Image 1: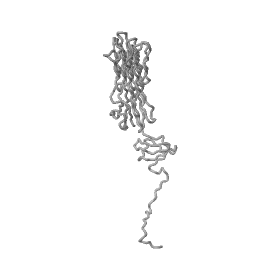
Image 2 (image 1 turned 180 degrees about the vertical axis):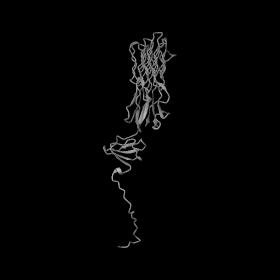
Image 3 (image 1 turned 60 degrees about the horizontal axis):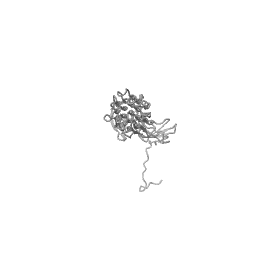
Image 4 (image 1 turned 45 degrees about the horizontal axis):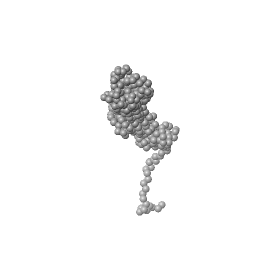
Length: 385
């Protein structure tokens, strides 16, 4: 044996004879991997993101992308679908735009459709409270608020002009958590026509009939609102339907005719305090008639009588109907003064503050009610869960 050359050789230190080599025999031996016969759930709590999960029965594989205790997100890295993501509940009130009142002894406009899931409060038309939505974290909830319908303007002699129906309101999602929730715009009230039977429009709530016996009322949409009220012969229109009551029929005989009041709306405390919305518009009345109508509770516009007592618009962001126009002898065309448009709708969302992401568009008003955040949309926008 040749002695080492101390000028060129180096000393090698061997490991302690008692040391052992740790080996990994299977993936299951790794601390950041789980092999199971089932998929992970949001309550499968890994130590950190990047944890690998194999379902040995289906072959699906997942990676944890968000590690929050009992609210974990797992991305399916195989087929790219069927990922496991946390969800939470969302309560809503969706109100469409109200219908406009017609010109010349017209019926009032119907209220916009009313759909509600909050705290077992009823929906319109006698409908039950709807189910809350379950939304996935990261999904985008799109909101569209319907405009109120314009009022009828002008006319020729005793032939009036229809107003417009209210516009639908809806909420939808870019995911598959729920089908679009749509409230139907309120129906326009029917204007007078001496020669033609004119039907008020159907809607969330229906429009009221005009001052002729052959004018039919508009129907409401099931679980959203009620029908309008009928007019009486010659001198008074019926009230538009509201979310909680049928529009009131006109009554009496000239000169003691009574125009029909708008149907009543519904109250909701989804914002933390009770607010009544979606009243129907009142019917129009002859200048020499007896009793002018009022709008339904919740913002319905009053019906008109003449230029000094014109019809009123439905209140903004209540989905209420506009009042029907009246009639004044000698006016050409007859009493076209008024702003009897329906009121615009509103959409209100409510989530737990602990779930609220703070990501919105469209500038909703955001307030706190107890343990919840409340988002009030008066125009289009979105909320990202």
